[in-house]
Amino acid sequence: MSSTIGASGTTALAVANPWAVVPSLGNLDAYISAVNRLPMLTAEEEQEFARKFKDQNDLEAAGKLVLSHLRLVVSVSRKYLGYGLPHGDLIQEGNIGLMKAVKRFDPDQGVRLVSYALHWIRAEIHEYILKNWRMVKVATTKAQRKLFFNLRSMKQGFKDDEDAQTHRDTLTDAQIEVMARQLNVKREEVIEMETRMSGGDVMLDPGPADDGEESFGPIAYLADASHEPTQEIENRERDTMATAGIAAALDQLDARSRRIVEERWLKVNDDGSGGMTLHELAAEYGVSAERIRQIEVAAMKKMKKALAEFA
Image 1: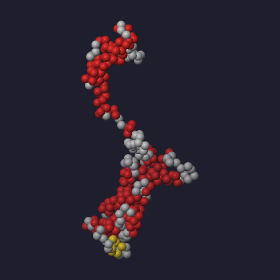
Image 2: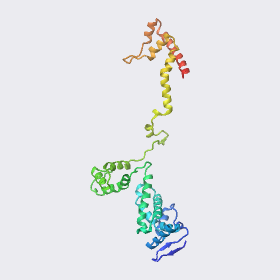
Image 3: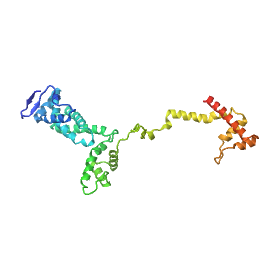
C-alpha cells in the first residue's frame, strides 16, 4: 500500500484497491481498530475526490471518500446496540448507507460529506432494525417509524425523572399525552406502538415439545377446517347418505321391517322422546319382543348393504 501526504499533512489513501486496508467484519475488534486508524480527509481533499468521482466516475476516489468516513458508521451504529441486533450487521448496513451517500453527494452544495452521509447511514440502519427486530414488522408508516425509534429513549427519560417513584414498565396517561404532543402523533398511535414493542413473537406452529409431546400453538385455533376441501366433500357425502342414502335403504325393506326401523331409530316425538319400544311393537304384531329384535337386526344388515351399494 502506498500513500500520499496532503497539503495539510493529513495522509490521503492512494491505493489501487482502497478496501484492502480494512479487515473483514469477521473480527469486529480488528475492523473497528483499523477504521479508527484511517486518516481523515481535509475539506480540499474531500472536494477533489468528490469531483473526480462525479465528473470522471473515478471509483478509487469514491473508495477514499468511503474509507475516510467508516469511523462515522461505527460511531452511529453504537447508538442502536440496544435493539439486540449484532453490531457487525449494524455496521454493515450503515456502510451501505454511506456508499449510497457518496454516490449521491454533490460537492457543489457547500456541505461536508459527513453531514450529508449521516442521514443515509441512519436510514439504512433504521430499515435493517425494522426488518429484523421482530419476525413481524412493527412499523410501516412514517409516524410508526418515528414512534419506534423514539419510544424507548423517551420512556427512559420518563424513568430518569421519576427516581423517587417506582419505575413503571408501561406509560401513564400523562406520559402518553406528552409523547404524542412532542412527536406530533395521535395518542392512540403511541398506545398501539407501546403494545407492539412490549409483545413478543409467537410461533404459529411450535412443533413438538422437548418431551416429545405436541406443543399447542395459535395455528391450532387459527385454522378454519370448515372450508377445507376434503372436509367439505366429507360433509356433503355425509349429508347425502343421511337423506337420499337412508331413503334408498328403507325402500329395500318390507313394510313391517321398515316400520320397526323407523319407530326404533328414525322417529322423534315433539317432546324429544323416541318411537315405540320392542314390547309395544311386539304387542301390536302379536309376536315376542325377541322376534321384533331379530327382525330389526336383519333389517339393519339389509340397510347397511344397501347403503354400501349407494355410496
